[in-house]
Image (cartoon, rainbow, N blue to C red):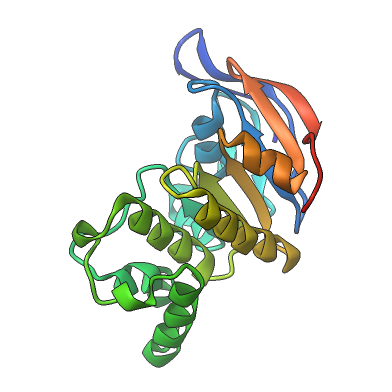
Length: 223
């Protein structure tokens, strides 16, 4: 991302002159107050928005020049945990988690095996035939995280992924994301949770009113 700005209304910048680079296998926290630009930054990386100025290169593709027809192929390589989950209400938990694998044509038996393993990792294998409406907010959040991780994405973008989870489960989910980074996934997590940031002592990007004002290690130490 090079000198990127994003304005939804002329002259009112959600992001302004932001430059950063995230490497393969790197784990990065994205922090800042509500309205600082965290969600906008993630949306730009996912090609849900286009920059008003600057260049964004994701997996070798320039987002600003990406044709609409090329966006789905890029997104299949990116796992996303949305703040509002975006689960498919008509589908079961198993179907929600497996949807990205179905899209790429993975055999059904293999999809079910991978989904079951992933649901076990987030503690929801017993809920695999339930629908999202019957789940708690925390359970829906874990389904969204399982969906994002099951395809072993090259990039993982997570917007407040532990916001509805208790502290112990938050650590388990963060450990899953850390494991993904160790396998080579670039992970970018937007969060307000200072405790998690200090626990993992990873690179921290801090946004303030759309500007990147800090890029460095978090305080604390890895446990």
